[in-house]
Amino acid sequence: MTPRARRRLHWAGALAVLAALGAVSLSYLDPHLMLDLADRLWACF
Image 1 (cartoon, rainbow, N blue to C red):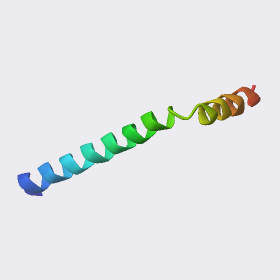
Image 2: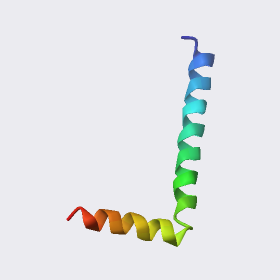
Image 3: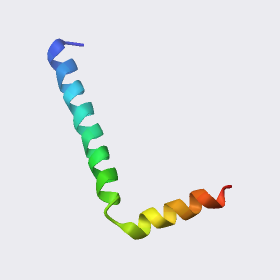
Image 4: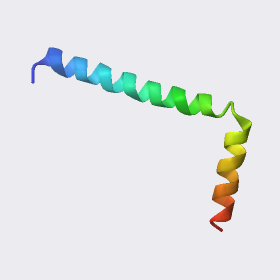
């Protein structure tokens, strides 16, 4: 793999990780979703 291709792959991976983290962060803005997840977690115990 050439250094240029490796650099592109690195940037694409970093962009994918940032997009996933952004989506998770935005999901915290919905209080109903967080309450539902907490209830599901509590039901396991």
